[in-house]
Structure formats: structure tokens, C-alpha cells
Image (cartoon, rainbow, N blue to C red):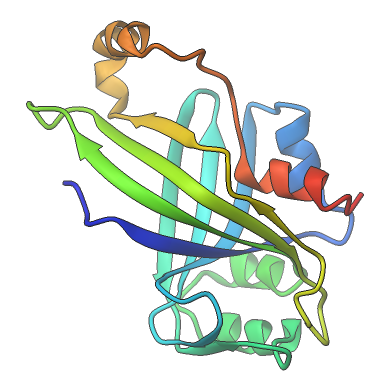
Amino acid sequence: MAYPARYINNIYLDTNDYSHYWDNVEGLSKRIKVRIRWYGDSMGSVNSPVLEFKIKDNMLGSKVSFPMSSITVDSSLTIEQIHEQFKVLPIANPIKAYLLTLRLSIMNRYHREYFTSQDGDFRFTVDSDLSFTELSNRENYFTNKIEYAYSKVLELKYDSDLDSRASIVSRAIPFRMTRSSKYVIAMQLLKIL
């Protein structure tokens, strides 16, 4: 299913020692990213945010999502407000306890266009107009921000049982395929570590 083009916003959360970031940089076969995602305006009242666990298990990627209550993204945003939201989510207690150890890390925003193959088996997304902003646990003034407007990210998405056909599709794309993470790019560009 292809969606209309739209802006996507994410707040990434990480451990105090940024283990989600380091697991990705080191290419661990099993890793996780935790983010809050919403669409439309990046600042102000966010009416339908979603907590997402982005899980990587070897070459397979999956997402688990939980709708959240409204949040306000402005200078009053704090980790305590986010943690209060986590406390009321229908999530198993060990996972909830883990969520309550996480800190705010970065926020990103980009424009996404969606395309689907004629048979519906392959989905392509093109992300442009990227920006990255450092977040702190308190007093966010969104001053450490980088516009990455001239880069584009093309992603090919498909179900795992289509691996053999996917290699044919990817060979037809006239670009070099690489492993990429907007979270890692943001952390490096913002010089957080």
C-alpha cells in the first residue's frame, strides 16, 4: 500500500551510554531502536504519536508499535513527560521498566514519497529534506540542528519470502546499495559522541 507523500518526524530514545547507537555502528546482528513517530508538523501539539520498537534480527527487520496519547514538542518537552506516557502503555512490565531507563537522544524529520511495484510485492520509499536535532532530557531549545536537505535516501522494502526476487529488483536500481541508518547519520553529524 502506498501512502500519499508526507513529512515524518521521529524522536529517538537511547540508553545513557547510547547502546542503541553503538550496536548499530558495530553492525550487531540483533539490535533495537526505540522511537516516537508522528506525521505532519514537527513542533507543537502532536495528536497521534506512536511508540515504535524497530527490531533487527540478522537481515530481517520488523516493527512493533503502540499508540500514545498526545504530546507537545516544544521547549517544555522532557524525558519525564515521555516516561509518564510509557507507564500507561499496555506493555509487559520488563519492557516498560527498560523504557523508563531511556533518555531523549535526537529528533529527525524528512519528507517521504511512497511507490509500489505493479504486483504490490515491493515497496520503495524516497526520503528527502532531512533534518536532525539534538535533544536533551530537559530544556529543549532545538538549537543544535543540521539540515541535510540535499541528500536522498531510497529504501527497498519487501517480505522475507521474496529475497530471491528482491536481488533481481535491487540489481535493476542504478545506485549502489548500502546499509544506512538516519539515527547513526544524525548522531555523527550532530557530533553527540
